[in-house]
Image (tube, rainbow, N blue to C red; front, top):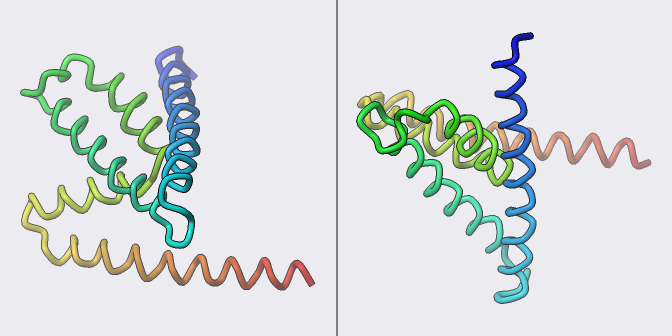
Length: 134
């Protein structure tokens, strides 16, 4: 493994740690302010993470203000911080890119498959956990 690859993993790891800590903090702040009856913390995290990854995606375009450091910003901020904060941001950015490319069927499929398959997967995982708990 080259030093460049090792550095990439280190940037992603650092960003993931920062993103995970941020997620924990934001969800606690939201829960303290509005309560935990509904998952407002998760919604705030998913929306704010999607906003941040969209911002960095635009800034790292070839004509963007961070284009010269796009590799570093992508690894630390987009993959690391946003990935540790919420993977919903990655899903949102990928879907946006499909819509921008007028790939309507793929965008709709990405939304439908992601939501339905993830709901099915979490349900199956939960069922398996209940079986293991017996």
